[in-house]
Image (cartoon, rainbow, N blue to C red; front, top):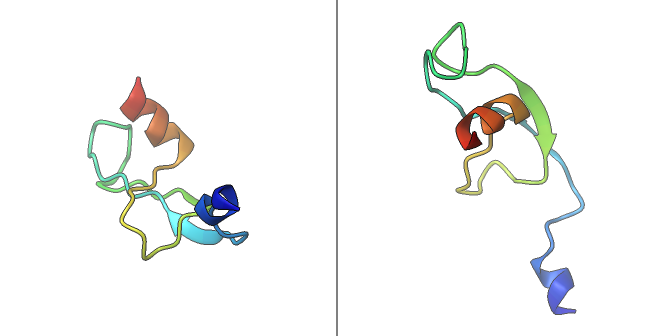
Length: 59
């Protein structure tokens, strides 16, 4: 039961990439415009990146 409490909800939210690193992740504008669905709700404090920006940030 403890594991079920720590799981995210069975819902996906439509979000946009929060990356705003101009000239660092090959964005033509100052902010990435990729949209995707995630289990992280918009009111949560975590920063969510699209796959491409995440890979650029990690490697």
